Length: 396
Image 1 (cartoon, one colour):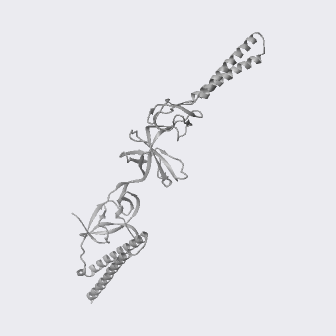
Image 2 (image 1 turned 45 degrees about the vertical axis):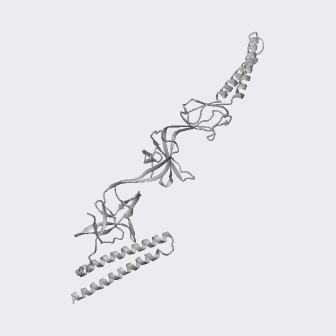
C-alpha cells in the first residue's frame, strides 16, 4: 500500500513538472509575441528582463522536482545531457579604474610681446613667423618722430638755459643780482635736463625687444599697423623646451584626483604614450564648465606642438588584490546580480548561482566586492540559458 502511494505521488509530481514546462513554453511564446508589438526600447528591455527572471525561476523549480522524483522513483529520473561551457578560474589581481578624458598639449612658456609704453605705429619689423629668437633680440621699431623732434627742441632749450645760468653766475660773482635769480637759473637747467632724459627714455621704448627665448609662433602685426600688445595683432613666442598636458575634469571627480595622481597620456597623432603625474591642480571650479583643471608635465619632444590633442587616463581607483570578472558574465534576477559558477558534486559538475556585489567597471572587467573568492571557476562562455543545478561539461 505504501509503495502504491509513493508511485501515485511521483506521478503527481511529474504532472506538476509538465505544467511548469508548459508554463515556461507559454512564457517564451509570449516573449516572442511581445517583441512584435510596438513599444519603447526601455519597455522591451524591462519585459525581457522580467521574462528571463521567470525563466530562471521555472528552471529552478524543474530541477527541484527532478531531484524529488529521482529520490522517490529512480526509474523516472531524466538523464540530461551536460551542457558544454567554458570556465575561468578566479584569482586575485590588481584592479585599476581610470577616468578617460581629452586634453591638449601646451607649453610652459608662452609669451605675447607687448610694448613698454603705449605702443605706436610699426616702422620696422625684424622677425617673421618661425624664427628662433633669443631673449633681448630687437623685434620691431615703432614710430618715434615726435619724440625725436621734442628731443631736439629740449636740447635747444637746454643750451639756452645753460647760457642764462652762466650769465647769472657771472653777475653773481661780481656781486650783481640776487641769489634767488641764480637758483632759478640753475633750476631751469636741471628741469630741461630732466625733460631730455624723459624724452630719451620714450625714444628707447620705440624699440621692442624679446623678453624670452623661443620660436616666433605667430607674427600677426605688419609695418604701418598700430602695435599695442594685443594677442590678436602682435607676436607670440613659444618655448617648447618645457611641455605640459592640460585637462579639464568634471567637478564630481574632485575627491578622486590629487596632486601626484598617476596619469597615462596618449598623443594619437604621434602614436606615443607617456606615463606622468598630476603636477598642478586648480583650486577653483569653473562657473560655466563646472569643472577644474589639472596639468601634467611631459618630457621635451621636438615632434610635439602646443594644442595637439592628448588622450588622458587618470587613475582614480586602485585595489591591489581584487576579484574581477568579465562584465558580460553578470546576470540579474529579482534578488539582484549573480554569476554562474561550476561546482563539483559527486561525480558530475553542475552550475550554481552565486549572488554578488559589484564595484567599479574598467574596460570589460568589473570588480566583485563580495560573493566570489579566488580559486572558484565561473562559467565564462555558454552561461546563457543555464539554470541552477544543470549538468556541465568542458572541452578537454
